[in-house]
Amino acid sequence: MSATIDLTSADARPRPAAAMAAAPAASQSKRSLLGLSRHDLGLALMEAGVPEKQARMRVQQLWHWLYVRGVSDFSQMANVSRDLRSLLDDKFEIRRPEIVEEQISVDGTRKWLFRFPARGAGRPVEIETVYIPEEGRGTLCVSSQVGCTLTCTFCHTGTQRLVRNLEPGEIVGQVLTARAQLGDFPEASTPQGAIVPSEGRLVSNVVMMGMGEPLYNYDNVKSALSVVSDGDGLALSKRRITLSTSGVVPMIEKTGAEMGVMLAISLHAVTDELRDVLVPINKKYPLADLMAACRAYPGLSNARRITFEYVMLKGVNDSLADARQLVRLLQGIPAKINLIPFNPWPGSDYECSDWDQIERFAELVNQAGYASPIRTPRGRDIFAACGQLKSESERMKKGDRLALEAAVAV
Ligand code: SF4
Image 1 (cartoon, helix red, strand yellow):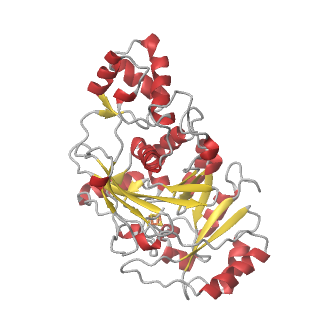
Image 2 (image 1 turned 180 degrees about the horizontal axis):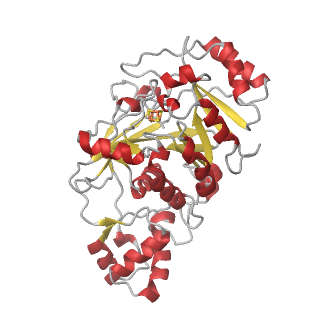
Image 3 (image 1 turned 90 degrees about the vertical axis):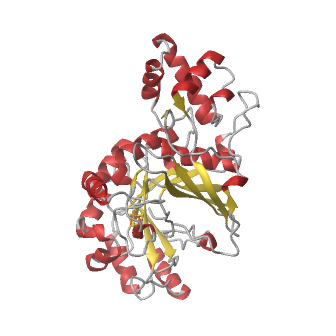
């Protein structure tokens, strides 16, 4: 949950959209099939005239082409008849977001600025998605909203008001586009069985940790993750999918029960007084409630620990007394604590803790029995690191925004 855009670094290597294969995204006139469940895909096909007795087989074909082969054009669906491809093309679309810009950090991290078409009377919107390659794995940090209703003071996204929620297809579209850009799909011309094995994938993990609060877009995130984790498609194990929340307490139990994904909590402070400032949703759902929800998270065990994210802010939350209180707070919760050196962004008021202090903090937490890795900042030169994402999408009209904020408030 956090994410922007400042493209000024000399180290970054921005590649303009013209250099990349990307579909234009001016407006969306046809219904997108991306992100639909199998059931809804079948209904859409039948509404378009596909006979009911064929629908199931057609859904399987489409699913394979979309999520195993990664095609983005009906014409590439070789085992679908020409007539049906034409029908599909008339009624639907499967295009992915337009890539406005791609930046590649000196450390290999990639950040894409994606544009989605306008919906209804709205305007096209832009979001950021980040890919972080690591030894033996690659993590895609996916956005759930354009902007955010929350205003976490250490987070750049928090300075961008909410424009709108992303649709399931727009969330899935980030995964598809990233995999396509990375060459993580087989060539469309290869034999049907020649798929990229799940073990060899570049995108091996997904974290809902980009722009927005995913639990304020619950239904769409749930639908999207169900597609992403479908074993006959993108097939990412739920153990490799992590949803990060700022602490929308009433939705946490439901998330574990219905989505079954790994949970991360954007914690950052160990007293209500400070967390009220850093993560203002804490005023609504204070630490005691949040910790109780974590203790009750379905499936919680030593093998399925909760990750607590803790950004290290110099002189704010990085004392050894804070570390001791953190240990007390997490008592009894199978947990891992990710210590995140603060990633500055233009206009931010905070400084990153001194490295020595981060190490002392980590050691104390570690000695208490919790894994507490210090996250190496990734993609700082392209503003792709934690808490740095933001897009310049137009704000929605105030009345519409307030209505949406009221609708998502739990
Ligand atoms: S850290 Fe806070 S402000 Fe930033 S995206 Fe997450 S919920 Fe929104």
